[in-house]
Length: 204
Image 1 (spheres, rainbow, N blue to C red):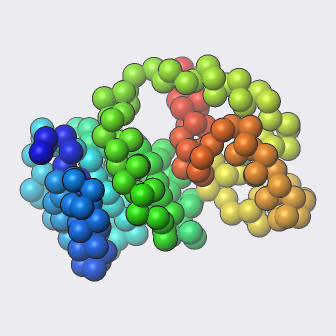
Image 2: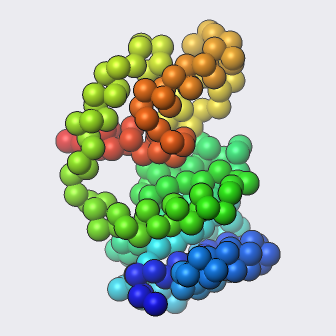
């Protein structure tokens, strides 16, 4: 087993840690379980490899602060953040703080496994100029003004009802625009959509 296939599960819920540990072990990952971000940071070496799966809501150091601490200590591991449906704004903030992906709970096992494999495969490209930035700009240009407004709301982490209120339209209309945005942007998930928008934002 290569060290690069190591997954650190950081979660304060023991049942979640154990179930994720079992799932990832059966998917042929090496797994280390940590009961908190504090516990992880207290034992983490500078030359860590692999990736981290953590929850955005944890007592003490939460997922957002965890990401900041990792960056301050120059850890480069990709971080996948698990989030409840009501925590999309936090998840968007996590991606702005450097998370490689976020997954809404409850999620299918394969979704997490695929996200980990993708994070591990792409971890060395994080600081490179993103090859898709030109393509993403082209997709953005295909959005109508209203679709762009809905996208801006989603990337800000706003729920559909808030976007609807801000734009003076119904939540159902927001859902239709949101579906059109996902389709035109070729986004497979909300995290994918947010990641594309952040790639464009960060481009000099």
